[in-house]
Amino acid sequence: MELVYPPVIALAKTMFRVLDLRIEIDGAEHIPTEGGAVLASNHVSYLDFIFCGLAAQPTKRLVRFMAKKSVFDHKISGPLMRGMRHIPVDRDAGAASFREATTALKDGEVVGVFPEATISESFTVKGLKSGAVRLARTAKVPLVPMAVWGPHRLWTKGHKKELTKRHVPVLIKVGQAIEMPKGISPDALTATLKERLSGLLDAVQKAYPDKPAGSEDRWWLPAHLGGTAPLPEAAAV
Image: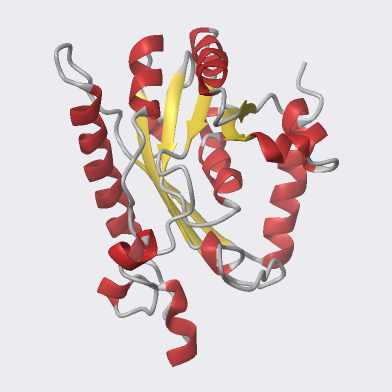
């Protein structure tokens, strides 16, 4: 029985209403209504998992996210993460996390992955790890790409936390599952995933209804859209 996840979702939705966040979800029908699937998203904020999980709500799915072990060790977040059956990732023992995620997928769960591994400070799609592709291929489940844009204005790396900021638009776009024919290497498929994520992210960035309030507010836009976020090369350094 799901004793923890539904109340957490209800609380999150209440907070969205209180803050009047303008959330739009496009493409939720691409998330399977049953059976396992890997949901692979870009990563721009500490809140991405909340909104990525929200994208699965129209299909009534609960997403089990892979997250770093330190989140599970925290006295507050740890019990919640375990109660929602998310999957801890210990970078010193990655094989165990991979096995747990594969088992969840074969049991019919949707597993959420951020293949960039860390937040992209350039607000573009960074180089990806191949884990999402390898999970989908090993478990023989669909690999569904998605992009989220907007939560970084509330809380992201290197910027002030503004969790009470109101009326922020959040755009979520889910794409079609990526075909994974036999004979194609994980690296080639990961390159395809990056291309698809970049296309989805570009679409939501261009459709985003808000503009910076002034020159000092341009930090949340990538450089190629006139923002002051660092270029991908500088962000990587």
